[in-house]
Length: 364
Image (cartoon, rainbow, N blue to C red; front, side, top):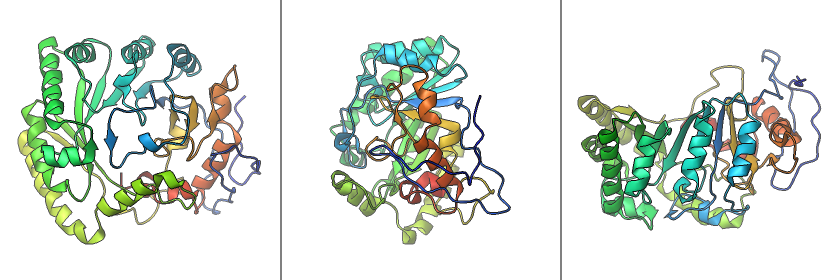
């Protein structure tokens, strides 16, 4: 039977190393009760492999302090078996999914159960054979990371990548899609920062020229501000602080967004832009962020994280889903660390992990 502990109940104090810690706080009198033991969600994000072939300036993958795994098909199947109600699966984490030798087998295993499967890629590893498997197989959607429309800008952010090669691979993917008559949904994803924002219109044109109908823009943001942040992440935090857009730059960005919206409409493209300023107040009496209720994240090594923004288990974890041989996933989802985080998110003072997060502030 699913437990129904509500906010204000006593939460155990014991926590695992790297776990999120938070003291439960009573809800305001007008707030609706918050369920701390929700059912398993219909959406999950699983990291196939914990390493990457690039060294992007804002990414922690090469500095992560947790176990770097490569999930086996056996473990992957075990996870699917424990989520019979799963409807959507996103195969991505810090690592590049196509580094996994059985990435397409994972897609097929999940899709065979009626699950909609999507993934992200940096496109650097997209051979002709992989492009064919993307468009001819059961993969539903693929997001491609492009943070610039010129080699100089793109390669200054995505170190070890070659812009010309990535653009060639994008063309290869879209050509394969057209020739196969595929329904694969392809969209570009751009991390917006101080020195690449001016290339937003040019990126729209580049994507349109290759037949990509959508661009999602995400703001570079300081989600590494927690006081207990490990020293290995300080250089990345410094880079983010230096390159994220400042308040006095927002009026110019508003003009750029207006120009880009008009261009997208002219090109017949979908353009998803981020909020420029934090939400002034909660839109409801519920938690500001619903990740630990509505979505589930598991690293390649089997750690359940509070959300995608935590990124690695040394920053925060609900525990190892494979530690308990039977129903280990549900045990972590309803474990002490998960309950404590949900309680804190429903209160007015969130855990330090969440306070600077763009998702929590409504700016991602």
